[in-house]
Image (tube, rainbow, N blue to C red; front, side):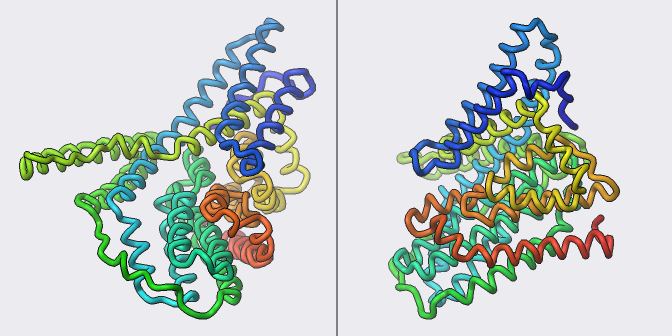
Length: 447
């Protein structure tokens, strides 16, 4: 479903110029989050909401038909809610598994295995690539960054290439799953491909990451990290394994809801959340009977309280802001690029733009403008999904995963340290696009 086209071109009016200025200023503060120590959700939410307030003022002052604005906002709320609640449930499950020490056990197992630096580099990369399609790239990157710091927080020669590997693997893994990255989730919920369609991107995403990882591994030092035998007794807490199974079931229900029942994917996710809360009720009730003198209830709402609300509000603000620019007519210029240069060239360029601007607003702009992709439109939508996800790895702040790891490994994984090895990511990016071309354009597999 696409948003309503703007009634008129307002790009040259005072509301168009003011809204564009609000977007640019807001995005400046988003991009310089570390410099000004301001959470990215604040300027994003301000920009997204203020743009529509300005539009409302303009329409009221000029006596224009407010029905068009009303329809646009209602559509935007519906669109954002689908993504918002999907991520809301996924984050709640992740917090539940963190609380049950699922990821702590993973961390300790890696640290206490006695692996050398090179093996740890590859193991964390493979985990990131195959975990992100389920847990999303940001959560995966944060978990694995914590693991890396736990392994050896002082060995910068190991941490930098390993951190880059985790970011690239998380973004590449998220590119071939409808809910592995916010960009793929947006494309899936917008109906640009079925659940299975995105799985066809696996070869391009996997080989591109493997090539980058191989090149990065040549810079990983020899030797073994310090031992951590003292943590070997950590175990998954009661209910942890069942919650893992429920999360898998919830993902299955979300997919079936969207593909078979034609309900929003978030509907299945919220159903899964209800199952989680019922299970916690059952678990607490059983514990009260077994130990009535000192019950220790599990509070599912505490998991909800810990989810990254700033990330959810950031997405809300960015999507609202791009929706406002679309309503004003700015994205018509974006559509013109496809007419002038062709879908393939522009979609490849989207990857580089994603690295600079962040893949979420770029993908939102592509979806909102809904350009004519020409012959083979389906394969082109798969291409832009791939490039927006993988291209965000080219610069450290080009993806949520990269920004998250920069915060987790402050002073170690930085813009400059990332750019030192950016050429390895560029080679992987070119390989990924080349595989897409052979697979979709020459062979026609998945097209």
